[in-house]
Length: 94
Image (cartoon, rainbow, N blue to C red; front, side, top):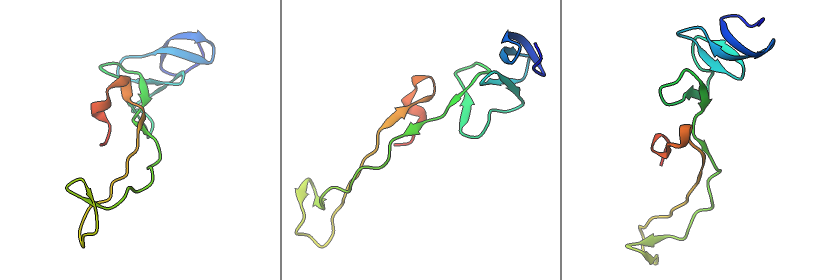
């Protein structure tokens, strides 16, 4: 294995287990997970953090679930969770 700080390899250029205290990400070993990634549940493997869809369009103005003809009301829009770390959606934003 030619990868620095690697304990075991799949191939010469792809690490499958890093030395203790280091994080594994895409076949390489790091002191911390790269930006946008977090250690998966209790492991030293970096996985993507929450991946969210784009925001949907704004809905109509409403107040107490009735469409507005009001001076004040709320408009809502939503987005979906596309991918959650280790499938745990509670780690994602609302």
